[in-house]
Length: 187
Image: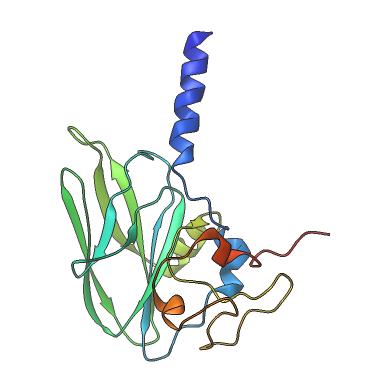
């Protein structure tokens, strides 16, 4: 009986580290339209394996998010070539060519390491990525375009109704309160 309790406690602790934001399938219509002069990169981690290990993801040396289990986030950038990386006891990198008005997808995972799990990043085609994204929780820092409950998303290129400054759309820190109103109440 004690073994079962310990196993359940370990499972609960592992799942506590998973993304708790709204699911992609529920908010995909509220994600801001892509500026045609920029490209978008989605980072996602579909598995909870190694949930306690959540390395930072860097894009050209700048932290853009964390590899959150069962979570996703996105960043918009000017066209160019980007190097995404994540590091624990080892480092993984992936080169991302990005064109204007293009969306790229990078899947993250954790594999067995000597002391700590090893991060892996790989470019994935849109068809496969969109299937994997459906049930993942939003774990990003960009505010999504949402107004009060029941309101339509803001027009493309317009800041969300709750945004205090334009940087809320392109970066900054989003709290759960910033995402209120994304999901309509079920009646």
